[in-house]
Image (cartoon, rainbow, N blue to C red; front, side, top):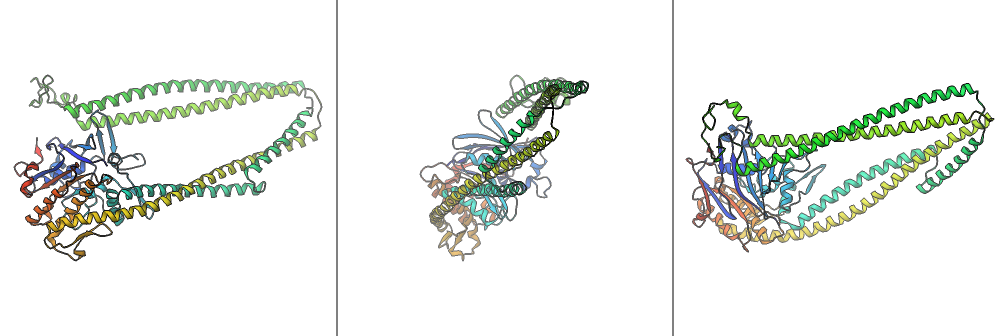
Length: 633
């Protein structure tokens, strides 16, 4: 399965900045004193990958002073998924994330799903990690697992109470921290068969929803067809209705022929000419109307052509802005304090040009835009394309409407022409008014019956089509249910084996770390048990949680089919209360994880020297009170 690795983290604002070292595969340690910024690193990384960090909210009392006071600040994360590299950018306070690749392709993705934004950053990154965002249900509520849920077993945060193994949820409610949710996260990450089971369960629920909708539609059509059959004919299937229609049409044809055979009573020429004049006037009005409609249609065609040109230019502008943003990401072009010749930074005094001449600062700065401003311009231009698309659709709808009106007017004009011909043809002959009246009434009656039968046929055909689809849907539901039941049985069988593997490794590392731990395992809810649940020693709380995460990583290295992304972010576990000896022993278990030379990555944030001496070579950065993580510009 695809693995996740963090290659570099950057923070940039008007007042503060941070640029991490390049993180390699394996263990990377950032050590530091309390308050020097270790947890800030974790918060920045988690926030940059769509997480919610309460300290970054402006209205919270415990907000992060430096970040909340900073302006135009953003987080850049260089990630590697499999063999592919991506650059993720999120501005503080924004609910959008931009993702670019080394070729300069940029996508702006929302963090939260909505009616307008169905594809999110979570969908993107889970897709790259080959983890399906499976759908779960509790009662009438349905939701999808997202990347923030997955991080609850990847990000070992600085929890005040390490008894809770899972990272605390961003938004606390009865769903997000339910047993169903925690079990699903574990099963999706560790159980290959459970991953397939949840996908099949989602398909089954979709099929069942379609089945219920179709069943409701079938019942509605049955009711409508029944009402029509009561008022006209007895209930019939489509074949019998078609036969009845053909018989009525044949009967109508005979009556119409008989009606035509009746001679029309002669009319006075003056009266006939008067009628012809009126009809001709009406026909001329229709022809004028047709000409006006044609002119409006031509105007709409011209407008449509102009809109297509605007759309083409807007798309070109969007492409150019994306290239400018990419160029800035690589070269840092957007700065008013850069020498235009050597591209070095220049310490420029306010109201002075780079060359030293006096300038108006506001006029000087208007030629430069920040990254966030260019991102806003990009989104505005993309919105322009959407607006032009809507205008094009509106024009096309209006054009189609005019065409239909033109067809209707042309048809009516032809009918007027036929009427004039009929008046001329009626100038001689004789008529039996009673026969004409009877024939005319019969024609109207037959046409009404044929219309009702055709309506009944239409409903019956739609009902039959819906019943066919319902039958297909029920068969699909039945097959999907069988697949779900089989996969559930397979998943439980596999999970029993996984629990055994997990328990063996977890027990081995716990016994190495906690002196009076005689047996460690996990229960049916995948929660750790020490000495069959009787053990209550507080000193075991930290290794109990930390080694749980190590065991998850170990299993992912043991089996390529497991979707755990072979990455751990561990933030200062010692703050939860653990003696140095047990902490060192817990960290030493990292040596037991690396097997088969498979690639993985752990970013560990801990106190200075609070790790085994053999891990000194893995220290990539040290932060202190005098050299904090966030540096002032």
